Length: 138
Image (cartoon, rainbow, N blue to C red):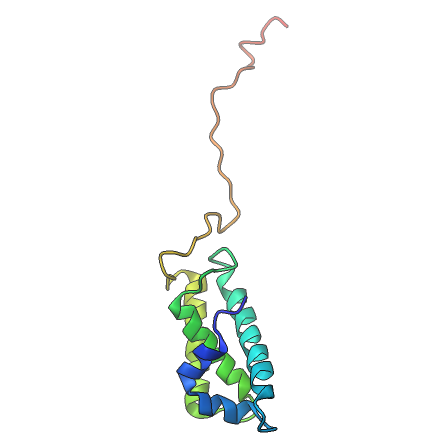
């Protein structure tokens, strides 16, 4: 599930900047395909981190995840020669994902958090019915 759309990406980096990165032919068709791939790749990275702390899919996505998805997708679109600013934003996005995974950073309150994080189940039972004393003589 994508956490951001082409419209989100255009708002974060301007429509012109995204078109310049994606539209080699000048007809606008490559923009949707390349940005779709980049946004899906960003979602996969986000899911990989966030799945350790939250149930997937996260719907609707928090504003934080949308921003992170845009930063990762923008980096993916310009992997050959990202600017220093884009590389820093990508690194910051990954750092935020690590903080979410470790529990240092929480997502919006509407997101359902997983209860069982470490796989340990504790069960408390009642008194034993059959003991050495109650079974004496059998």
